Amino acid sequence: MTKRPTKQITHPDYPAFLSTLKERILHARTSAARAVNRELVLLYWDIGRGIVEKQQTAGWGDSVVERLAADLRAEFPDMRGFSPFNLWRMRQLSLEYSSPEFLAQAVPEIALPGEAAARTKTADVHKSLTRKSSVSLIWDQPADPLSQVVRELVAGVPWGHHIELLKKVKSPAARLYYLRATAQFGWSRNVLINQIKGGAYERAVKEKKTHNFALALPEHFAEQADEMMKSRYNLEFLGIGRAVRERELEDRLITRLQQFILELGYGFCFVGRQYRLALGSKEYFVDLLFYHRFLKALVAFDLKIGSFEPEHAGKMDFYLNLLNEKERAPDDQPSIGIILCAEKDEIEVEYALKSKANPIGVAEYRLQPKLPAEFKGRLPTARQLADVVREGLPIRK
Image 1 (spheres, one colour):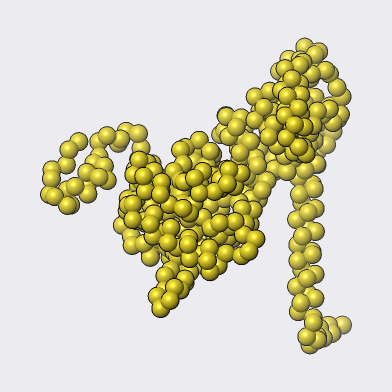
Image 2 (spheres, rainbow, N blue to C red):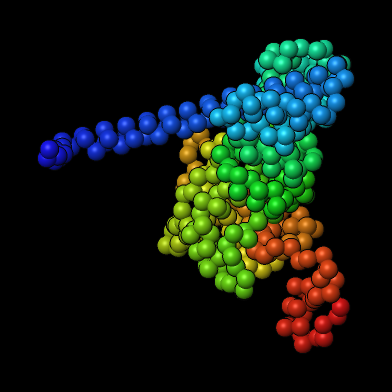
């Protein structure tokens, strides 16, 4: 039987119609995969919670895990995931994400209308964390809203990611950070591992940030802008192992734009590179310009291959004036500037930003992995090398 050739459709609306259907199919396939993952993680949560409850209330020992793994694999031979190792991880998942320490970190996740209501609910949650939980059936839903919020957050992250988090991250606050970031950004497991190795939590939350947001912005917006910015950006993915010019650094970032946006964080949308701003007969160019969807603000990046200098802040302040005058939409927040440099002196940055009216942050970037511990103190610093080049001084160890 001869196969009839497919008739070519030349209607002008057909390509758009096909594109819409493809997007719908991809969305449905992704939604189905997420739904399957959600139910699987919730199943594992309940198995882990059941093991913990029986051990706490009925005195079952650790051997129940081996026995349960064998019985479940015998009963469901076509299902993977019931190894003793996995059951121990299910138990750990339930214990770790139900602990008072972790739940206390998740208190701000509860959104309630009104500040007074929020304070009341937070107080209730803290009280509930100190009460001994009653025994319930393993398929019962958590009674308190905080546990339910955590349960839904955990269900939105694939099981393989949870194994990495349970192995590599011990701090409850750091685990919550990576859980939220994975759920929001859609990180793959490899991206999550690299973010953990690069200390994304420490750089985003714990390390001191240098900016003038509190002076240049309203309090609520200054807090959001501070959360958006990191103290240090990990650019190891660029693979740079030698001295480069600022334009080459910019070129590398553009060619790895997806990885750079992942490093910047959630909400950044790329606008352009060497973004042109005209003033009279002169032209000025912003190295990299982004728009932050949730801050509703333009974010300009100025790349510096050397140390921060006070004049960098003046240049950025000038760029932000132009952006606010010529590019900012009527309902946008004030534009924000971030100066990315190899090194910074915090006191120098503080004095340079003190008199600036626009919100400016200064952050370092890292191009190479940290020096191994055994070499620390045995090699000259960047400042010592600069002194040698500039003045011909001998290197001091």
